[in-house]
Length: 369
Ligand SMILES: Nc1nc2c(ncn2[C@@H]2O[C@H](COP(=O)(O)OP(=O)(O)O)[C@@H](O)[C@H]2O)c(=O)[nH]1
Ligand SMILES: [Mg+2]
Image (cartoon, rainbow, N blue to C red; front, top):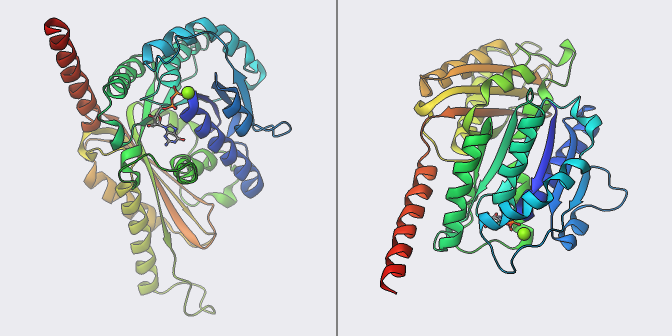
């Protein structure tokens, strides 16, 4: 599956860069393209300069200039700025790349201003002009340390509401869940955090592009499967497990014990993927789901796929489940899961509640003040 990635605002642009890196990796490791084009849309020229170097073709900078009230960090300010600049952004996108694009993926941090307000504006425009292609949003929820900032809570709630209305699906990523306590991480840590956020998309996008039966184990997972799975609120995760190297290298067919221990490891990889979902959710709230196994050549069998399927059906009994598997890993096995069409996400409800409470407080203060 090929995405056009459009990062908006600082967080969005830095993540768009990670998607561009994924495409570079896909081309060198697997000789496929998974991104038709990646854009970094920002009014911060210095950041765009850092992220995109001349000659580094993978990520294209789109500098926007419109004026915005100094210091206004609200989503509403981002909306106003993007409304002034949206035509410039649309013009900057290479129309030629649209043809090969299966879906659009906007990326932004929900708590900021430009990405938070700008993504809904651009997503709406793309939906109007390219009616037949799905528009997805990959939205990063704030760090715990940002929860006391009323502006950020407000922005997050407004952005969640807006993208829910416009996008075909919103894949949530929670900064909170990424093992960083307390303060906002250092730029270095943020870099590895961003890599971690983009990585679950790697196998998912590659699988269908690696045409040819030599890669397929059971069933191919292609763009159609993904398009039919990703709807509404969505979480994504990936887990990895080392496969035992055979203790008897001369024995071609693995024995029963060896086979079952490898199936066990594949299960472990799926458990890990579920534990590391990009946002906390209950699997029974999912209407759709997907799992994808990637394994080293010759190291997987149809039993493994069945076992994974049975387990996921048990955990997500209300979901329509799709699957796929391919030989795409070396030395280890990876399971990617997508949990979608979630009818309830606690984190979202939390932001709505917090934002409503803060609005009440502000209202009361305004009355008495
Ligand atoms: N994971 C991650 N989150 C970020 C990064 N930069 C900012 N954020 C988060 O995104 C939110 C939005 O900030 P930012 O992107 O700077 O706002 P904008 O430039 O106005 O769109 C922040 O509150 C952080 O929670 C980043 O590089 N990685
Ligand atoms: Mg910014």
